[in-house]
Length: 116
Length: 113
Image (cartoon, rainbow over all chains, first blue to last red; front, side, top):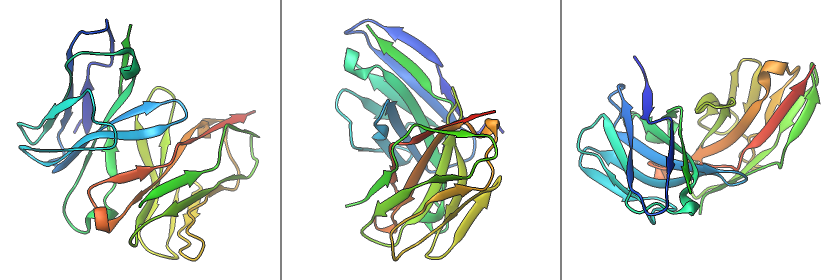
């Protein structure tokens, strides 16, 4: 049981390049999230998904796209990377059952992205 | 709307000192409250949680009590260790918007021997 895994762990891009970050979870969780973490700003929600085939915007969605084609995977895409997207990206998942607000999020180890 | 406010860091303590990290919240409903810990180079891990007023969450010597009257969820530990050095995040989940978490900005703790 690996929990939440993220690929890659590190990446350096040039401005204008594109890339996809992969998040995978093996806990059969319905909800999945993408956050970015920047110094002094905590975690900010980029996009999230409440189930396979569904996605929604979070607090800072601009410049990112997501897809949830399979329940266990949640992909975050950067179509044209900008230096402002230099950050650490975290994926999380959450069980939908029971009283949702009681259920914690489980986090991956993060992807450190630098855009030059 | 929903928000979480944490005390500013960084916090530096000597080993065996008492720790308090303040957290207050604003929520539209009756939220569940969480403390997460992030060790260097890692993702966030759940430390403890409380799901209703007056509940006390506890784990690894850390405690936090859900205080509805003061909208607070302060994290405490009686005797910190060097291994507690990490960043601590307070968070809430509001049943009115149950699919999202709201995080504080994090408080960095360094414990020196």
